Length: 297
Image (cartoon, rainbow, N blue to C red; front, side, top):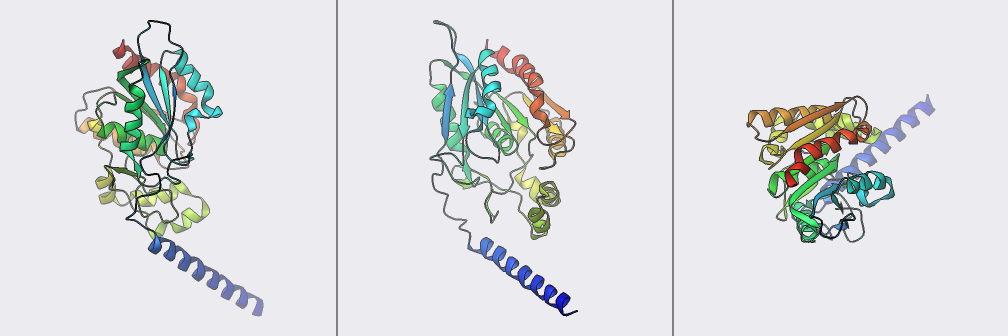
């Protein structure tokens, strides 16, 4: 009995200490000062090998997810990157956090900074500045949809396992949004204390499902996909363990229909988990060729 009593006391002390630490992390986080290197991005332009005198190429902008770094410039994405180059695109790989010279965390990332890098790449004579599509996965899909909803020179979007709203930053405190516009934080879905258990055990989907029950916050933070100036392809997963990408994609399709969206919008639902849609690139390539690249010719 003494052992059980001391074990219970130790557990209570640890729980109290953990709770105090978590409260301190949240209370002490600086929500006013923008992160170091705010607005800075790391980019790599792959113009392909256009023949002399060939027309400029449509530009695909690749955005990675919560892993940070510059995913589309990495060896892991080399094969798909080269396929896009072979199909006549130029490609801009953008690292918007977790890469040298960029913000350390996914915290109030400047959409303006990403857009400025896209415009600079579009000045390259090998790039068709009037034909720009963005492709992103997970939190990068959130970024891609936000970019296209705020900047009308984005002509198409491919969003893999996307979110339908702006969610919290990837900081320990999670009290700021992941993205900002004109140096102002965007409205976002807050992370309630009730998600603590799921977050500590790695149940990310459960945490996001709890956040999404705040329907008022979801409405305030919803991405205005109806403002996108071109075709949209959403690719979601039925058993997404990271967040409910299928449900959020369904919500975006419903929003597009409700607003009478004037462009093509498709939703591919893939059986499996968060990474399963990565096997759907043949269908993604076909969508881009039919609804984006042909309009550039």
